[in-house]
Length: 105
Image 1: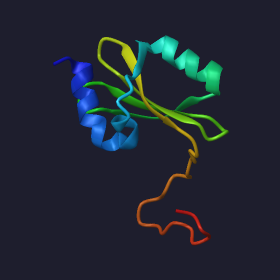
Image 2: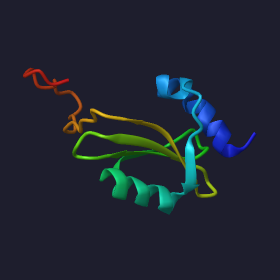
Image 3: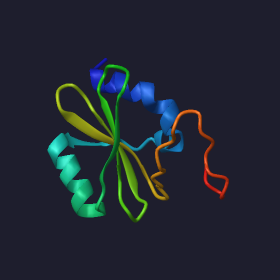
Image 4: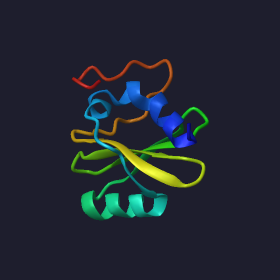
């Protein structure tokens, strides 16, 4: 099983309905994926994390609310794993403080 496939299987529970569609993820080298998201959707890197040691998970989002989840394996192959709308960037929370009670999350 390849490293990318292992990372994708680890992410399936997080991707929910997007993973259930059976659609193949769109894969290419990282630079091409990032350029396509920027050019086609004005999406920029919003968050990043390590995906179980098998790769890097990135969230790209636009000011219009579109978003894409990209997983990149150690060899540099990136795949768009999920896309959607309605992305909101929340302000950072300070540990020990209650979130605002004005309807925010």
